[in-house]
Length: 268
Figure 1 (cartoon, rainbow, N blue to C red):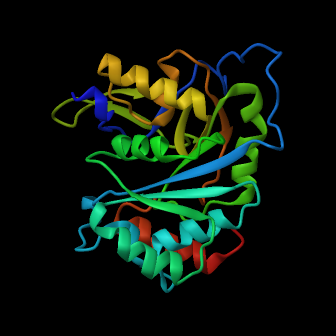
Figure 2 (cartoon, rainbow, N blue to C red):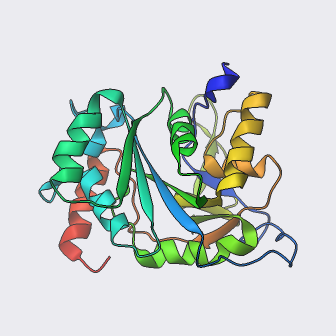
């Protein structure tokens, strides 16, 4: 692996296992300061993927949803959150000009400060985004470009813990029954779902912490399963707060149908 480029392929579906009934690891020392008003909060939007599971000629983030590209909804909703100071959009290099014209300019999304090229993997794209941020950034939120139903409520619920923990993510408890199967798709056992959470984004970190974590991961050749995964490996505690069932990630045709239904329901 070319460590100088910080290349981290991702290969999981985002399930976190917590110890017993805990919703967080042990907290950092009590003398850590809470979030200060002057802290700059930047958001990195990971949107450079090809979206092969959607089985469509267009990458999923550009598919229409209620008359706008999915990515446009994500950016618009994030821009409405007062705590967000700036947004860095990470897309494939061939989509930079298109995104500026067809999304940023068209929908007048002023909080997007820059659009940069992503890498071969999501993690490499995130690192490109991290390295491009303003030096004044203290807090960075990393969010999927195809999670358009982000709200101020979810975002602020994460932010209010960041000063104490330095790393906070949102998730929802696993409610379905989980089965372990063998290579023949025969059930081996039933997984105890106690302490299992389905991880969402945004995942929010102290900028210095997430940079330190990704640098160590590169040095050790560790492939992160998500952004919180590299922080856990430092080790550093990561707090989980409850997200929203409406905060869906649109990756399949079925997800797109669900997203359309959420729009029809409203009040998400």
